[in-house]
Length: 210
Image (tube, one colour):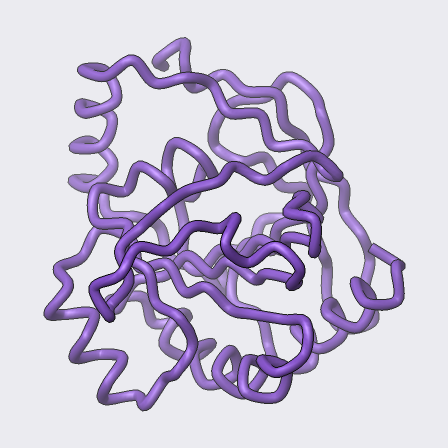
C-alpha cells in the first residue's frame, strides 16, 4: 500500500433511533475509512479499474496526507458544477452541508436521490444545503441523469476522483459527510440513508446533539 494512504482517522459510532451515524476521530488507521459495522447491503464499491487508475495517478503526484477529525475543518475543495461555475465547500459556510458522493451507475445512490431532493427542498431556505458530488463520470452523462430525475440541489463534478479519493477516502457509494455551519466535520454515513435517517441526523445537528 502507498505510504501516503496512511492517515489519522477513526470512526465513532453514534447510535440513532433509525440507524447508525458515524463520526470521525483522530487515530492511526489505513486510508480505507474504517467503520465499526459493514454496510455492504446498501452501498456499492468503486469499480476496480477506476481504483487502479486513481492509484496510478496518486503515485505520479505528490499527494499530501489529509487528516479527517471530528470538530476540525473539513477538507475544502473547488469543483465545477453542472451550470459551468466553480463551487467550493467554503462557499457554504453558515449552512449545514451534506456532501453526498455518488455515481449514476450506483443503484443505492439512485434510490437515495429522491429523499435527498425532498430533504433539500424542505430545508434549502433555512440553514441547510446538499452538495451532490458525482465521482468519475462525464458531464453529459451526469446532466442527463439529473435532468431526467428533476433534481434541483447543487451537483458538482469530481471527474478525476481526487476530492473523493484523496480528501474524503471514498471507496463505496453512496457515502455522505455532514459539515457544520463553521465548516467543521461532524461525521460520515457510509451507505444509503433513508429520509427518516436524514431528518433525524439533521435535527440532532441543529439541536447540538452531534
